[in-house]
Length: 315
Image 1 (cartoon, helix red, strand yellow):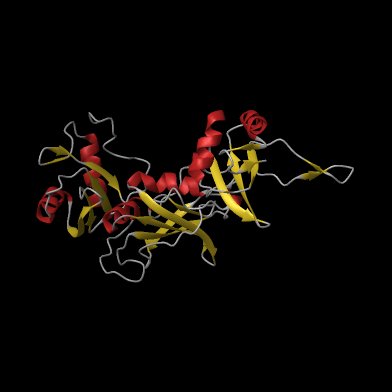
Image 2 (cartoon, one colour):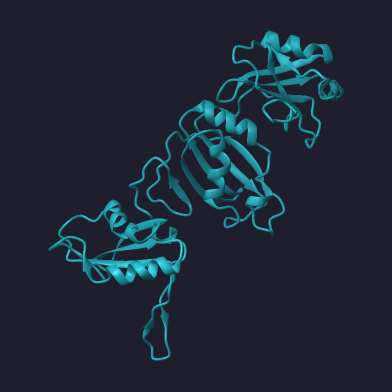
């Protein structure tokens, strides 16, 4: 173990003649990298200055046994692998060769096209996708959809370097098992670059998110827990208790914004989500609390009251 607590080697990976080196000095040159690796065999290809901090590299040996020899040597050595005094972390790459020629989908860009194999659309939530990919940098936007290739997602970063770092680390890997439903056995990621540079997200929803625009309207279907009214034996609607309130806004004298509704409803508890939409010629909103009790208190206190004197009412 290193002083940082990170294992210098990962033993769970399948051996490959391509090695992935991390924590290199950012000024490390290709010549230095080759000199460091040459004692263990013939180097046939390299890829330097990879990752957001340009401190990672890939080295391809002519023979698998040469790569195994290097990993085995440093794994059993009392001295860590070092370049310019920095401890270098070595692992087998999930690739078996370094491909430098760029075909369709290999031209670097800031938007990744991710195909998630082995899952249906409802198996992987957009929040899970965001959690996995935000580990490599700020994710600006995500759009998910279904194509003949399967369940896919477009993930937009601020720049090509961050996108490349995420692709190098995650391509051909799997989403962690604990983030998936029990019935999903595997979820391999196949990642290429998209020709898009800026995704057009019109609504926040369970299929699309824009993390740069907090004022973007929320599609009502994105609010979990919203239940259609039940009908009783007498044919009248029976209101079921829910952690989501449906507010009808009448006598509008001022524009309704998410901020205004948040200010009013947050006095009674944590607000998880707010959606404003037009229905039957009127303005309505969905306000989601973490539990039914909080929603019930807010409903009892606010129903029928005005937000502003002479302004609009919430029923």
